[in-house]
Length: 366
Ligand SMILES: NC(=O)c1ccc[n+]([C@@H]2O[C@H](COP(=O)([O-])OP(=O)(O)OC[C@H]3O[C@@H](n4cnc5c(N)ncnc54)[C@H](O)[C@@H]3O)[C@@H](O)[C@H]2O)c1
Ligand SMILES: [Zn+2]
Image (tube, rainbow, N blue to C red; front, side, top):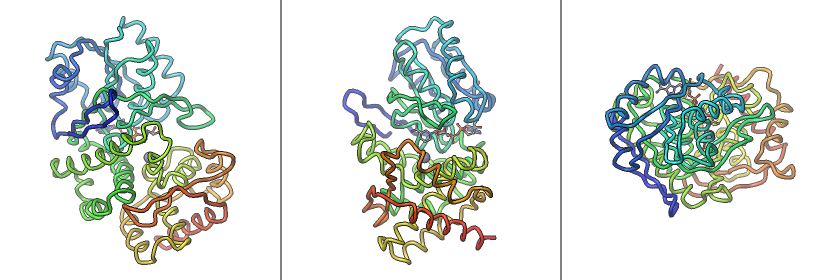
């Protein structure tokens, strides 16, 4: 178990193989609520919906279920609006819990709706993708998208508890595993270099989801790191920004690809390589360290960068990001992996250099 320490808003993250079937018991013992609503997507519902339902009903909970379509498109005002209407018809009260059961899309959407309906219901996160288990379910950021950009409307609303069963990752597509791995490797590079190399040595663990206990240990380590960072900076005013390593360029690539061809974490891996290149170019990293990390990251058979994304368009997207203030682009730059990390201003020329490096890699990889 990992604890997110936020004084009265502290909460546990319970990570245990095959624990999905004891969700109801954990909720009864720790939260003690009887009425709830599960928000999930069609894919997760089909695969694991009945396991969760049984577990909750066995504990005598009265549960309703709202199911959305899978995919980023569900993080919209339209879908949130529909969920509010449906919740209103269920006669919930302030003591009812919302269970967000799915990947980051469901976690963000259900978290947002749960945090605003009746001025905020308690939310329980039950993440089912690697990305959601190691990242989005922890930390209390919720969001939906607008046409103008991603995550533009949202809240900070910490969950009551996060329940993680790594065994459900067995059914995840390899692209979704790679996407989650992007965030796992990010934690290593910003916080724990040994963990980075250990993960690189055991990539097949994630590909096969072969050994639930090992996987449990990796997911736990990521949750510990995220919990530590969020515990020190809940509202994203300082330290928490190091979690954006790889995301300045990564978000630009994701936006430039129309949020489709590349998964979030895959774009972040490209972004980390680009941002490490900036560190190298400034003399913060030695050639040797850079080459070692690059070799490890390029083992992940990344999908190609979008063909039609030019440097000029990438820069446009990077400048549009909501983290940009007064035209200043800040980037998380690593000086010593796992140790010395800084948020520093970067210029368009450096970003162009990083982009040209990424393109050259693509050519050399064929
Ligand atoms: N709140 C945060 O702090 C935070 C952090 C990072 C990312 N995010 C958000 O997370 C979202 C991405 O999350 P994601 O990558 O989990 O995507 P996702 O929720 O779309 O899930 C990816 C796909 O996997 C399917 N799926 C889920 N669990 C499965 C399982 N166990 N087996 C088989 N298929 C399964 C889903 O139906 C979906 O099709 C983005 O919207 C991003 O903005 C939020
Ligand atoms: Zn991310």
